[in-house]
Amino acid sequence: MPSSPATISPPAPVSVDRAAACAYGVPVKFRKLLIWIPVWGAVFVAGVLLFNFVLMPMLVHQRGAVIVPDLRMVSETEAQREVSGLGLNLRVDRSDYNAEVPQGYVISQSPRPSETIKEGRSVMVVLSLGARTQLVPELKGMSLRQSREVLSRSNLRVGRVARVLAGGEPREQVLASNPPVGEELPEGDVVDLVVAVGGQKARYAMPDLTGQDLLFIREKLRDMGFRVGGVRYESREGVFPNTVIGQTPPPGAMIREGDSIELVAALSLIHI
Picture 1 (cartoon, rainbow, N blue to C red):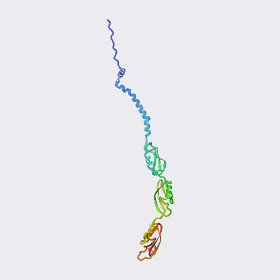
Picture 2 (picture 1 turned 90 degrees about the vertical axis):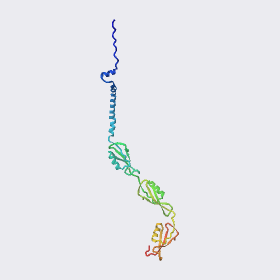
Picture 3 (picture 1 turned 180 degrees about the vertical axis):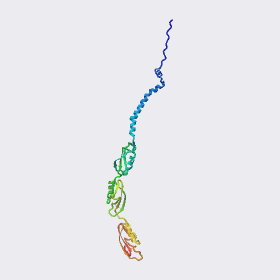
Picture 4 (picture 1 turned 135 degrees about the horizontal axis):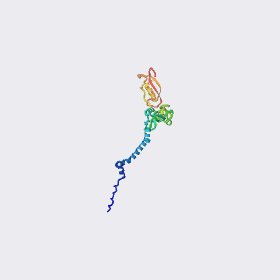
């Protein structure tokens, strides 16, 4: 019998990737690493572009940047010295009145404190002219109410009021002011007034002046607002010269401020 042909078994299937890897001598474990190389390259290129076109311009722009100091409530001279030391310039934008900031000091600034600007730039400031001032107006002869109105129109106020008794009609009248008329004061300041108060004169009981020294008592009466109308001298034994020995009105009589008093004194070799 003829022999049957021999059966040839097909070779075992081999993975194409594995075969290729073996053919080129590359281990299978490095296949994934080869796949990520292009990804890393793309990331690197993107980083370079980001640095060159975004980060680098920002760094260049910030090169020489200065933090603006706080110049408020600082004198112009001190502010100039401070900004010059930082490579900046100081420019006065304008000057305004300000009662809270002394004259020649900075009220406000631009750029504001802690902002960042490049070297060589300018910081604009507003300087204070101090408080507005007003001249004390003429108040003599006015009533207290009128004085308040006049001072209010000048942005001034009435301060302390000293009242003194004066004869005549019962009305108040300004005699003087402190500071005096024409003096310059900051707006809102006060002016003290001396006001005469008229009306009934004060009444007193006449004291007994006998035995007092003439020179002393005459000066005292004048200081109290009385007038010594005259002095008559009489000889009196045992009495020291210039001693008061009589008076008109008599002791106990009622007298008003400003009334005249007549005195009698012991005779002296030198009449006063």
